[in-house]
Image (cartoon, rainbow over all chains, first blue to last red; front, side):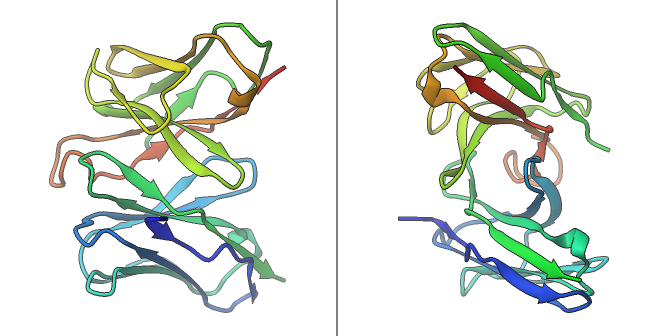
Length: 111
Length: 118
């Protein structure tokens, strides 16, 4: 049973649009949530961390967390072709140390 | 900025060889991790360390060992390389102390080592 679920995509959006990436998790007591961007052949790069319910904004990126629904999302405003990548959701699970990664959503931003 | 440096971007070795992958971080992070990433399987934790000389098994430790003699350096060792260990290997590090819990600080990744075992 997968503990962090993401739609594999690809999610295709036109340049300038808002891209919405979603992630659900199974562990109700999860406390820490992270979004990473991974370009093909490269390593994951941290975009944002979120720990409390609500929205957290950083530039064009907004992370949204709803612990009651066990749902975390990432919004990318004014999407650019350079945003085309795989986005990984990561959640600290019930083990004391383990960060559980979703399989990632591939985003394509069409010029 | 956090800098996590992996010694090689690409590495080709033969079956049965002993392989060393090195990782160095410059941010005084206590926690260090080794993952492998394979298509369709995602990121899987091999080993991690929370202090010098301390190491803990992750999800897939078989065939691997690690060494942490200095705080900034975490080495992954393939004792006798096999073809099923061909993969992308990723090192990461994070703070253990601070305003968040010991495991709640974000992990920062190195550039990765693409290892091929022939």
